[in-house]
Length: 429
Image (cartoon, rainbow, N blue to C red):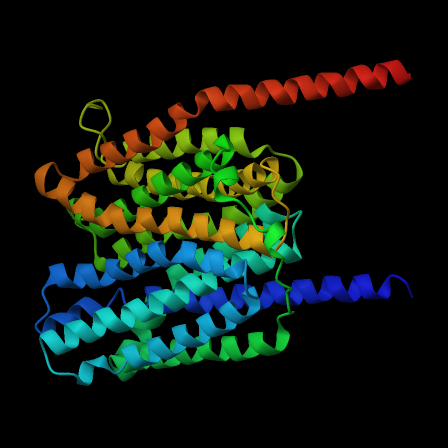
């Protein structure tokens, strides 16, 4: 009978994880469903492609700016409330976005798109920061595993979202994709109100110090690695289809190639999360994964100075798969590094700490997703796709090289610790 509360608590934690995974899946589907048709509809409303690009990237900027604020607020208030309200705002904004085509063309349509997209981004930031906080509190010893599961759901949603958007668009026009998936997200918010447990706030004396966190090299390694990785990903995706046109492929084949990185990423992230929680050290894993990511990016173009590497389709597809395979350990081990650095800084595994770190993680991610397409567009105009990917490869490589001394110190500490344990065991014998 004594074990019954523990079993019930464990089941509730698993149910919480399932609800959050489904909610995040619906939310990311809502974000990605506009890719196949929004630009077409926006141009009918007199919106230039440049403005369409800013509408896309505006949400990334809002998430980058608001995530630290939500992370701070989560240390004062219950993350459950922010999660539920964020989902409901997200769902409502998506439903409203499906009605914007009735507005007059030009300025009214553009202003409404920016406003609704910005409000939706606030809901996204609230959901993402609070979801990381909640699962961190439920599974404090399995951070990498549950984060891998969440990112796997996001990767699957990035693949399925455009397909659902395209299908509903053909079935019922512009509004139907937003109404269906927005309603599903709002329903997830209502279900979360019933299922998610309450978390207590913490007294002021237990709240984290930002200076303590940013004094850890492990935290900075995770932050810069996530920025470099997501900068590279979002620099590549807007222009990758243009690069593939040289192979004279159909749109269907190009779409299938685009599905390769998120497919491999979605399959690999839970495995890497499990390994990082059980057997593998985060810092060496992140260092090696960054080099693998840099190598795959270097061969995407390929780099102009790699004259011996042919520009052929099979190599492009192979590097696309390798990119997704390398991206998975970077994303998961970077989060693990940030959480380990926070613990080494003396922070407790409470609501305040997880909320604060969730804000850091989201900001480092979305500054990369925001700045990547903008700088990539400049690179494409002046230098072309091969040099763009070369620049991204150098960015990732420099990030890894900058923390090579930190890697050496980490490995030396682990060696000394293992040696101490071995000597202690020999003395006991």
